[in-house]
Image (cartoon, rainbow over all chains, first blue to last red):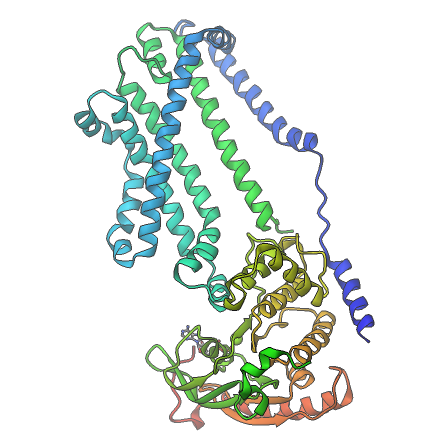
Length: 285
Length: 276
Ligand SMILES: Nc1ncnc2c1ncn2[C@@H]1O[C@H](COP(=O)(O)OP(=O)(O)O)[C@@H](O)[C@H]1O
Ligand SMILES: [Mg+2]
């Protein structure tokens, strides 16, 4: 009887276990990249056509060949790497502080009810505040220094990160909370074993949005707060404008765009990996 | 079979003190929605009680009260010193943990098992998975399993709590008939092996007759116990057998009467008008 039962069960299970096949790495990378490359080619073509129409003189609005050539030249210069290194260091420092601040504020606000009432909407309000509006105050407080830039980067990114965590805590599925309660998890243990892990996807999208704000604030900051004898991407951009070096200016803009896209793709990859692990990626139909 | 731990609980042997006792328990939601009205019910040690009623009659409310997920408005609930585990209609597994880790978490939290090492817990989890015929699937994620398999993992997790009382809230409601039948056999076997006391909620009359030592019928709005049917059919029973079907149809008739009572609200002057 029991052998019969377990055989029945084994039969049903074998029918029901999902066998999701995964394509090879090369195929997946190709499937992702070819639309991207086509889009880039299309944009370059449109750009070239606009230049050919003679809408603006070439020295103000150079074509893709000139700009990419200039970019290639810069890639061979040490100063370029110094500039990128400084900017990336600021981005990482600012973002790391923002994550720390966002985590602390998010955890406190999501757990303590009076804090929620007091600061919940303020945090959302801060998110809508254009970060460039903080700069006059930042410069008053910190002079023309890196601290002024970091101050604004943190203010730009931290609210999104805190909000991501708060939303994740709020939307923890009640059934999981009940399951945790039944298992005997209370207070901090419940927070640690159920609420925090459950809010991970939302926290991750908060991080992603926070990064976008941080990167924008950083670029604004580097254009506004030029520190003497210190190069940076923003400083190079400003420099190129002063010298009316249109190809150099556009080359640096491409660099900014590419860094932004690459980091965004990293967050996207992390998000996808999480969804796959949790089984949140099962599409309808 | 008499484990030394049983000597620590003499009350279990005398069979007099029930595993769960509800004494005139009422539950009011908000201001006036009387979900349960003076429910008195007990589940003996080792007994399998099925709680049957139309949907919305307060079955889940009752289990939540017993589980301590919510507080009764009036009355008393006594679960003694026994540990309580619960299964829901959804498996409610943690998607960020593997199947095995879900069970290990339960083992870790359960106080008597606190001193165990990680490795012991892993081995124990593997045994429990074996018990629900899921041996070797511990490394999978919950979403990789079918609904029936997930529900068995949930059962294994509940068993990991080493509870005396198992509360089940329509645990097989979302499964197809064939899987459900198999899980009935499975549950019956484990209930016997472990000498569990089970309070099993369902709105499926045949399921109640198939599993229960006793079927308790609840009325709707407010929920009260209106009838109790001891089921003395020999085990194992089959859901599609004639005896089960015969008893089930008698109980279904009684349940229909109860539902019909609500089709004529004019007959109940005292009824609260909330059509929620
Ligand atoms: N948290 C709640 N707040 C207000 N009303 C509730 C709540 N939970 C259940 N109810 C109401 O109590 C009644 C019984 O619900 P429930 O116990 O879920 O019924 P069942 O499980 O038998 O279907 C229903 O009318 C339902 O609308
Ligand atoms: Mg229910």
